[in-house]
Amino acid sequence: MPRPPADEHRRPRALLAMHGHLAARLFDEAALRRLTTLAELDPDLVVDDFTTPAAERALRDTEVIVSCWGCPPLTPAVLGRAPRLRAVVHAAGSVKQHITGACWRRGILVSSAAWANALPVAEYTVAFVLLSGKEVLRVREDYRARRAAHDWVAACSGAGNYRRTVGIVGASRIGRRVLELLRPHDLDLLLHDPYLPPGEAERLGATAVELDELCARSDVVTVHAPELPSTRHLLNRERLALMRTGATLINTSRGSLIDQRALTEELVTGRLSAVLDVTEPEVLPPDSPLYDLPNVVLTPHIAGSLGNELHRLAAAAADELERYVTGRPFAHPVTEEEWERSA
Image (cartoon, rainbow, N blue to C red; front, side, top):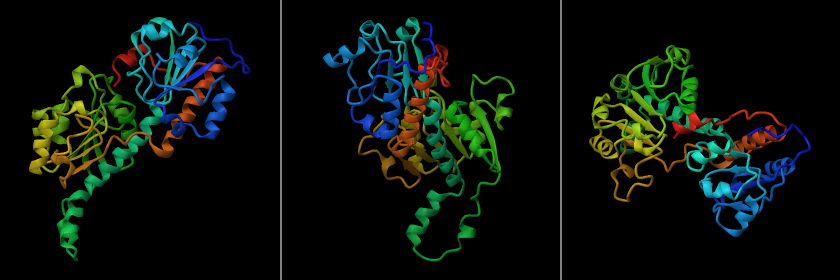
């Protein structure tokens, strides 16, 4: 589908599609002013169901959908009711939940703010990599129990981040940002990604290794691979058993990449520690031991953008909408090939 002609004064019809409560948190007054200047957009119409009468009326004239978490799938039936739709600007990471094969067959242009959402995930990861090296979880519990002076230098003789080995699973946007943030530290970085071109790991400041070797050599293993049929239980019982006693596993990707039962068994013994922002299921049952284990940090999928970080996603979406309106290519397009192997 050809792009519209460049015209700084052209205002295409746009529609917000996401969880109803999300728009007010995502777009502050300045972002909404920018969006409504660039496009004909009703900020009070936020669609999370394309089958309602209001949504169907809006779709008839919509040229650009500005989406975020909670956007319904753009199925062939939905696209049939949106004859003028040319582009989807996603103000979040993965587009796998709402972009369908029908979108590519129709030639719809797709943009994602995955690069922006990757930043806080990488920051969360790096913070816990460094805290893990300092054995903060163990020391915290010890100090809480003692509540007194102690020879902490002797007690922490095995701690520290000098020449620790960190294994990164997946050279995704987040994985690459983690590598970039870790490079200034005195760490040995390993990287596993089956799609990595020869020499790319070295360019990123890491050593390319097979996954089994990464698990066996790393003091910290952090997971940044996509959720695909081939990556389900990528870290299975056998690979978890390869990890060094005292090592830490960090997962900010998807819970399905790790065998949850096998990991829980390892964590209950205390042999490994873990920082888990995602699990399988997404919310663990109330009787899961992971809520109370002293060697586990369990957070409810908050590593990605939240709070004021949402405004970065809004700004990214507005930037892409401006590029579209003025006839320029997206700065952060999503291709069909990327979509097929994305999380």
